[in-house]
Length: 597
Image (cartoon, rainbow, N blue to C red):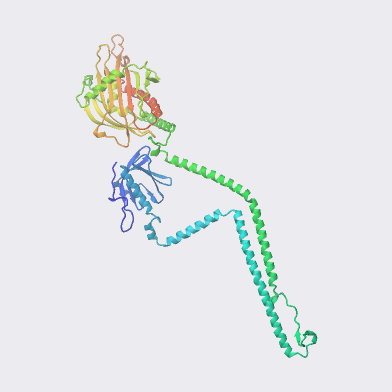
């Protein structure tokens, strides 16, 4: 995967005029779905928005999706140094950069755009003006007041406050009482003085007419006017002292009643507190159930994402992995059955070279390696494993027997498999020919997605690259191998000749490993011998008189991180099906045709 950027600067580059981060664009791998996996996409970061296109050339047709980064959460992957995830609510983008340095550049650029969006930065404060401060302050005050109101105080604290207010009010009432008393005394003195002046004026007018009884005779012989006792009432007949006493008594009564009510509330506080605790517990349970349900929903919505596929840190457990693989294989079987019922095979005229052409050692650069592999298979693969305790018989169906020897290396299953079979009506030459011929490969091999011949080394040796259909959650596998067909002449005239096809992994510059597939390593051999039973009388040999003994051996290193139990279960299930499917195909192709020894 390659990556290009439309901005040549670092993640701190900003436009000097607008103060905004510059646009960033480049190629990132984006997880599409579990069928197509990671795909290269042209990704553009601009104006706080992350958009992606199928390619840079298709930008004019519009983006295929976009995310607003204001509330986005950017999460670098814990184990994959090139991957990072961007989530906005329930939408998640899984992205991979070319290397950790490019990932860091993208993450920092996205964070910079996110920080410069909305009201979250210094530049945005300058843009939106000082009114923001007033609004923020008012909002903060409102939030604080509301929070304090909601929390409130306990009733006992409120009672203490009321006691304090009562003391203050009583002191205020005492002060008012003193003021009223002073006012009442001042009014009384004023009335007394005014009455005295009026009486002195009357003395001047009616001294002779006033009876002596209204005067008090002093010892010096003078007369003094007698005044009635002063009234405690003030002006306009208001009794200030009485009113003040009544106000004090009324206030004290109100405070006493309020204190009594508070006492009753305090007594009931424990009961209400228990009810509140129960309601809070119910609410907590409901919130936990809601969060759990949402997590399960998110898990299901993202089930099938890259975190659930095969890998050292996969979130899917072994049982779920096995169930998913088995379900995918069942679906493939149903599709294949339907295709076989509807498919009309086109006859292919593939010329078959004479047997002698396959008995010679080639001169290509892999000739020595091919001869070495052939001799090893002839020496070890044809050995009888029936009495060997290291080999376990796992399948027996009629003439077919499948053996397995359990081998693990660094946690990877490398179990060698060996199958023996006997097929009537076909020869070893015909079986090996159809197994080796790439022209008819897709007629019987249903697990291959595509393949091509990378190089033709000779008439009986080719280098083939093929990718296998993905079975989610397992990663997709590809194989690069050399395939050679050979005829091994018998050393004893009573023994049959042996036909052999060996496929073993090699390297080639035109098919280098990629990060899209896990490269598997193989060493496979199809070894066949033809047995002929003499016909009766002078009859010619027919297909009823021939029997092909097949020995199929496979040593496969699948690579990756698939659980051992899953790999063994899949091998036990798929190898017998493959062998029966292939031999049935050979019988169908050779029926009614001349026998090819």
